[in-house]
Image (cartoon, rainbow, N blue to C red; front, side, top):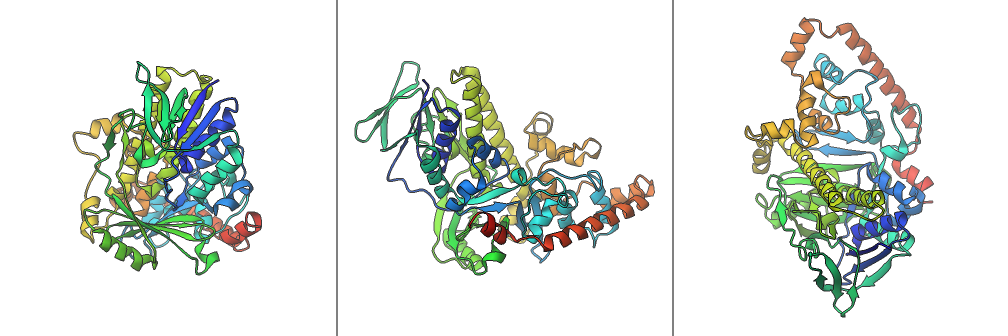
Length: 510
C-alpha cells in the first residue's frame, strides 16, 4: 500500500488530500498541520480549469458553494489600465473564441471602418458572446442565445479558500488521518530520501512520499531538501494590502467577474463573495511605501481594517525532489493578476494524481523529471502572460507605470529562444501578430492586447489592404449588421434573465 504524508493544511493541503483520497481510496494518507499557523483569509478567484478539479472530486455546485460563500465568475474585467477615462474597461471572458461573424482579422477591419461602433473594448463581445453575460451581470443555463456557452465548463468561481479547505476536510477526507503537530526534524536514508518526519511531541511519521503544502515557508521542499528559491526578477509587485468590505447594494455589487482596477502603483482586485467583497491592492514597494499604498487603497475602497502582506515571485529549483513534492505556495508564487494562486495549485495536484494513477504509484525518475518539466513550463508560461499586461499598457502617468510599461520581455538576445522554441505564450503572442499564421485558438492574450489598444493590424495596413480590395466593404457591412442583430437579440433575451445574485439565491443559497 502506498503511503502519503501531507505537511500543511489550508486550501492547498486539503485540496491535495481530497484528490488523493478520492482517486486512491486504498492509499494510506496522513495530513499534518501546525495548529499555530493562521491561514490568510482572503477571497480567491479561479479560472475555468478549476472545473476539472471539481469533476475529479465528483462534487456539484450545490454540494459546496453555499458553505464557502462562493459566487460564479465568467470573466476578468480590467479597468483603468489604458487611459483612465470612463471607457477604460475591457474584459477577458472565459470560453472559446467564436468565429461565427468572421475570422481573426475581421474585427480589426470593422474597428477602422467604424471606430465609434467598434472601440477597443468591443473586441471581446465580437469574438466571445459570454462577454454579454459578464457586462449585464447575468447567469443562464446552456441555450442557443449565448453561442459556445457551456455553463459547466465556461463558468468558474469566487470563494473563501479557507472555508473551501475546511469543507473538503469535513466532507471528502474522512479517510485521511489528521494530525495537529509541528514538524521539527526529519530522517533520511542513504540516498537522501526522507524516511520519517518527527513532530514536536516526538512522534514519527513515515511515508513513501511527502507532499509539502506548508505555504511560503516550504518547510520540506526548501527547508529539508534544499531546493532553493529562484526569484522572477521582471514582475513589478512585491506587496499587498487586503481587506473585506460589506455590500451596500448586494444585487448590483455581486458581479460575475473579478475586477482588476489599475491604481498609481499597481492594481486593486475586487472579488465578490456571498457574504462580503474581497479587496486587495497589489503594489510595488519600490514606488510606494506601505503607508502610502494603504492610504491609496483606503481612498479607493473605503476600507477600514486592513492587513499587509509581503511576497516574492518565483519558484523552488525543483517541484519534486527525491520523495518530496511541493504543491501551491511551497513550490512557487506569482501575483494573482490572472488568478494564478489556486490555478497552479489545482493544476499541479491534477498532474501529480495523474502521475500516480498512470504508474499505479510506482513512480520512477522519468515520472519525476516529467512532472518537474511540466510544472516549470506552466509557471513560466503564466509568468510571461502576467508580464504582458504591464508591457502592453500604454499608461505613463505615474513613475510606476512609466517604468513598467516601457519594458519588454523580448530583448534581442532572447528573441530566438523566446519565439522559436519557447514557452507557449510567447509563441502565441508573436503568432497573434503574424496574421498569415494566426492559429484558431489564440488564448487570452488578444483580449488583453486589443483592450489596451495594441493592434496587429494598423490603420496603414488597413488602408493598404482596402485599397487592394483584399477585404470587401460589402462584406464588412454584412458582418456589422449580423453582429448588431445578434447583439440586440442577446441583450433583449438577457433582460428577462435573473441577475447573478438572483440566480445564486434561487439555485444555491436557498
